[in-house]
Image 1 (cartoon, rainbow, N blue to C red):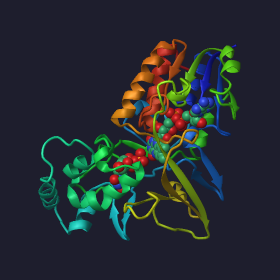
Image 2 (image 1 turned 30 degrees about the vertical axis):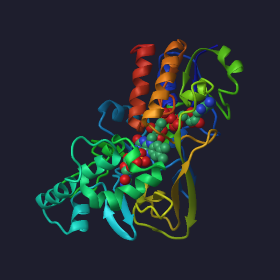
Image 3 (image 1 turned 90 degrees about the horizontal axis):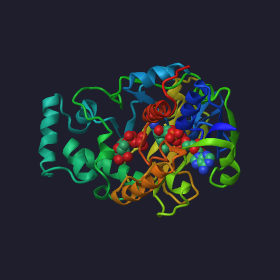
Length: 368
Ligand code: FAD
Ligand code: UDP
């Protein structure tokens, strides 16, 4: 008999499993895919680690999460500084003095702020949607060249129908600083993300290629409790209706070239180019070999049964999620956690923090 049946071997499941084992509990992890790690899994080719489910950069301001992750892996000094490509014009991201200077020829922060203030006046009152929020943060020129096209292809809907919070993730700075994140700690695990997951799951039984929702009768009697990190609507057999997600399609090419685009992440911000990002994986780890791998990331409509990448946190879906969350509260022997079970736009550090907190609530503070 196991103490915990853990459904999903992504970061949430793996951190919880590690913490439970450290407190003397016996865990079984079941994973639908043919590998562990969920969306942070990387595939290695020609010595380059390819971020198979989208580029992942670890960044956090939670000291405890940084220290926790560093118990399992060391991080390199990678700092994410994507470049936006709008019809062949290149701009630094996030929106900062380098962007403003290239766009308007402004030199000082005061000039940039004046330009934005002038353009912002198009919006009065509290921003009601992503378009209004974006214009009020950076003005109409940046909205038109660097936000509108990217966002509408990413989410498959008009910027006026999207929640404002999505764009608030991006810093706006009046300094010459191309660091995409404001967080204190950042990097890519030395040796790759798989190493982090392998270290977390060391000594824990994992069964790959097992879908909990298909094998429920067989699996449930094996454990006292369940930790479920799959989609919450699937757990309840879609009884309240289906939650919507945004899908992605990745196209990866091997190129006989040392350096294809000179940066790990290039964003294609015009509507006409069908992909949003082009990722050159070797730059995450400062690779210098003779070949390179480049992945184009195409946003896609999502259909049930496909990988669910991004929750669509609009009003309709949040309301539906609320119904599932109430059902989840009644399941006393099940802990729901992670990006899919909580239907949240969580970053990796949020997921680790949340798994540590849930483990502590559940198991107490008996650290290893
Ligand atoms: P997942 O990684 O999704 O793990 C859930 C696991 O459960 C999966 O392995 C799945 O196969 C399995 N599963 C689901 N249902 C079942 C079932 N019925 N039976 C068995 N197994 C099941 N975060 C950052 O901090 N920085 C970034 O740069 C970043 N970039 C991202 C880019 C993209 C394109 C995406 C989609 C996300 C990105 N994230 C990033 C977020 C990050 O991926 C997540 O925060 C984190 O991986 C979520 O971990 P999780 O365990 O909650 O979910
Ligand atoms: N965004 C944009 N232009 C860019 C990059 C991002 O308009 O060049 C917007 C877009 O709406 C996106 C949001 O900012 O969904 C958040 O971007 P982030 O890079 O944090 O998205 P993620 O890494 O989660 O895909």
